[in-house]
Amino acid sequence: MIYSFGGHDLLGECSRRDLPIERLKSVVAWNISKLRPVLFGQAPYNPVLGETHHVSSGHINVLIERVSHHPPVSALQATHEEENIDVMWVQHFIPKFRGAYVELEVKGKRVMKLQSRKETYDMNQPRLVIRLVPVPRADWAGKMKIKCPETDLEAELHLVSDSFIERFRGNNNRAVKGKISESSSGSKLYDIFGNWDRTISAKNLKTGEVEVLYYANESISGLKPPTVKNLKEVMESESAMVWSEVSEGILNKDWERAREAKKAVEEKQRKSLKQREVSGESWVPQHFSVVKNGKDWDCTPLQPTVPRAPLVITEAHEDIMN
Image (cartoon, helix red, strand yellow):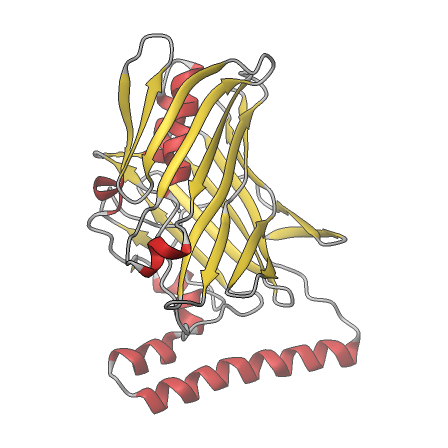
């Protein structure tokens, strides 16, 4: 997910800041902006093997590909042309059943490279907790860590999950507590606190000054879908193409058409799988080199940067990566 903030995209701010500590705080804000309240329920779309999403907004180009279906694994590459920033991640989920709820551990590599600063930021993703009682719902919880070896700085954020009683009372406390520290000495520089769906602040432990790092409302307001700039350049694997008939059925409230269209997409996938099994061929992703090591996955983009996309978001403050 890439967003802008206050008229300036949050990803670009990660490299624009002059001081290393300011750049890390911007990376923290960008990471928090990727969190969204999760809608619980049955989704009409289940990404298929090889499905892609290629989209641009401003100076940012993003390419996502489903590189494995069993288990479901997605890879992402993003390029900020103006600030010379590269983002790459691969993610998959490991479910753990806990009785009244299910934990989905998000595994995979997440890296942001500020090429102009010669800095690399390694990141992870919190867990997704799906609770079954008192009412079904899903939310983010657990620890996020961001580390930059070149600057000797790191941030650690804890997403606080509400207790069963608080959930039962209908409270919605998406709190964040954390810190920014020097990696080598462990010396704490900032306290971080707030709610990831509202406001996140940082307190300088040396001066006592408090600043707001992130406003959720300003970051995610006015979100719109991309539009097609050049239909001839849209790949057949693009999500909008794969699910076009399903979407038309849903928009027209023609549920039978939507169901049949979804069955057709799934049947095409099953047929392709059988053909590969008969011929002994393995699936090869279009845009990433994939390596599996036990339960871990790693992906390397085949191209150094993401080109401009035929799908474009024209507004400066749009969400273009999901």
